[in-house]
Each structure stands twice: as structure tokens, then as C-alpha cells.
Image 1 (cartoon, helix red, strand yellow):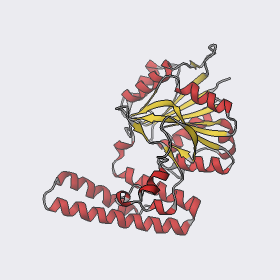
Image 2 (cartoon, one colour):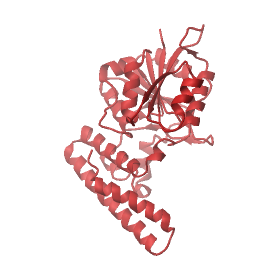
Image 3 (cartoon, helix red, strand yellow):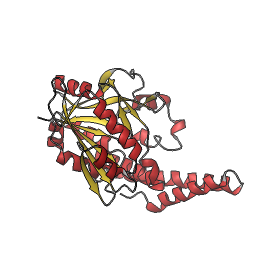
Length: 315
């Protein structure tokens, strides 16, 4: 029996993907075969139309990996659902291609789920490339927080509200229940997937793991941050390639989450607020560009913000 299926969605990150796969193989796990004392793991890579050498690299260097190579960009959410459907493990691990597993993080996460049958999802302690802490544990956002988080107003938000959202009062190396953990390294029971289904394909990227954890908790499962299991996440290497779409997808996903869990009226108010927010940012950046301050950067931002406004942030 396979203990864990690791699902990695790849898009033009050949070198990072190779480092990620190397770190898994170097872990105390057995890939596709039984080895006394080690969990049996399968690795599934879903490539989303990479234009670099990712596909051929995986085929040549990692024959033990199950590779699904697509000729169109299917996105993070659909890619993970394809991986879930193909997976045979008792547990499922969503793992970003720009991560590296440290030491025995994978066996630790498996052992914790084995020992705690009421826990449906665990997330790891995540480090930045320089070894500093990367925040990946959260409480569910409130309606008030929606107007501050990831907007130009965030610096004016009450610190207590932000600290509560980011679970700042808890230690980075601790083990405790949270509302949701980020999908860069999220392990779930197959029973959770069997009960609530895969990720909501209405999300392209962003907020999909928050929504999945919300659905899991609503179904009676606990979500735990496991600060003793560590990975490195070289943040945002895939999403940084998509420009203005990153803003659009992030805010559309945010609106979708609040529509699903707080109602259509509030979601409409939030959408209009965000459009006005981007209009304000466009005017500020345009003015700075006109007076000659870093004109090329200002032009790029104006183009990005204008695309967001034109989209209407309608999913």
C-alpha cells in the first residue's frame, strides 16, 4: 500500500523542480517500493504546458515519477485535481515545485496524521530561501479584514487584526490547530478528499487551499500547523511569470471565497471596493510617472492596474 502521493504542479521551473524532486528522493522515504521503516511514496508531476525543458528533464532524470504533461496551461487547481484523481496513497501532499523538503519532514507529517485520526490536514513550517520564517498558517479572514489584506490599506489595518489572521501569537516551531494552511506544502487524508471532493475549479490560483480547509473543517476535520516539519519555499517562482493576471486571479479568488462563505451581497461590495482601490493606485502611479519618477516601472504598473480594472474582477 502506498502511504503518500506527492502532487507537484509544474510550470517553467525546470531547475527548481529538479531540486524539489532531489530533496524528496533524499528524504527517508521509499519511492514506489517497500523499504523497512520508511513510508512508501509515489511522486506525481502535472506539467502545465511548460515551454522550458521541464518535461524532458523529468522523463530523463526521474523515471520513477508519474508525469502528466499537458499542452495547455491547465492551472494549479485543475492540475492538483488531476493529481488527486491519479493518486493511490493514503495521504495526499500538495507540494509546490519551488520547494525543497528538509530532513524527515514527510515522515513526520505522515506520522502525525497516523497518530491523530481527527486531523484531516496538516501544513509544514516553511522557510524562505534565506532561512527566515515564511508565514503559512492562518485563521479565516473576517469581513473587515477583506478590505485591508493585500490592498494598499493593509499598512493602516489594526495590528491586532493582522496578528490574529497570521496567528502571530503562536511559535513558528509549535504544533497547534489553525483554520487553514497554505498549499505550498499541504498534506491531507484521502478520506478528506473522498468526503469533500477536490479543489474548487472556480479558483484559478490563490484562496483555493483556504476554501478547501474551510470545507474540511465544516465537515468535522481539524487542520493543524506542524512546526516541527520543515520545508524551504522559494516563494512565487511560478506565479511571478503571469504579470497582471496575478492581481486579477488573486482578487477574483478572494471575492469568490467571500461569495461562497459570506454571501453575494458582501462579495459585490468587496468587488467594487477593490476596483476603486486599483483605480486609486493607477492614478497614483500615473501621476508619479508623469513627473518623471521611475517612469518604466510606473508604466508597467499602470498597464497592470488598468487590466485589473477592465476585467471588472468578475470570475
